[in-house]
Length: 321
Image 1 (cartoon, rainbow, N blue to C red):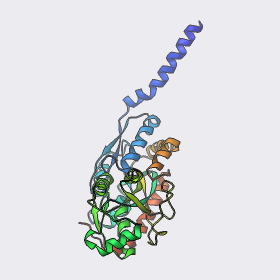
Image 2: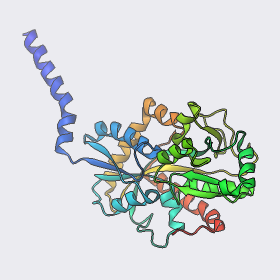
Image 3: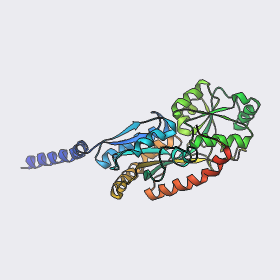
Image 4: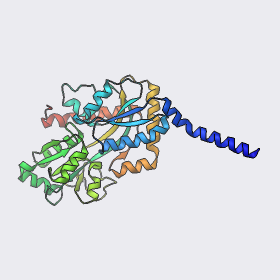
């Protein structure tokens, strides 16, 4: 009798373990669109989320890279998707708070066309020198660029991004006219930095931190108000005598019109994913900060950053093509 009971319990346990996978088969796949190539910070965070959210949602969750136009390609696809919670985008803040100031025909309204779901991460930026730059600190590199204007180039993951305008502000504060070199993502930008094609890169630390640790490049400064926990020996720009700060965030969004209960369900899955120490440590190792918020808090942060960037962008005189 005991053997039969044990066998029955074992069968029930096996069946319960199979439930999530059966549910995942019955439910549609959730796509998290990423507007940058594989290997960059947005892609890394999205894959961490997808892995954890599969269990919580009981659905298969995949990352779908749609690189191009500083994240606008992915947001354009999201705008056309059904508001059923099965198509989401993990977007850096630039596409929602900077690019609307730059493009008359953006292709989407950053407020009306999307539903905020959850903030996932906040970030400062890293200013990284490659072998094409001289030795020395950030002040020495900026002085070299001022003396060699033809070499005063800096790479970022795309035009109209937070790194793009952080670099512009850094140049203005240093009296250097810097030329922006936009890539379709941080990974290809970092490769050209390592190869010496560009002397400097401004982007999230995740794009260059491993290369910095390997001695291939040098992170000279970070753009936050305080030093990064991942790079405690690297000074801020302000500490280095360059009065510039810049930060941003990654948010998870759905199409406009998502039902409140769908938003809440996905938000809970994000909260659960970011609660794990393993995920927090992984995100931190890339120089980012796991920083969950409610949908309402994400919307408020988006509005605040949008207003914050208005004056610097207008003062820069930059015109999008």
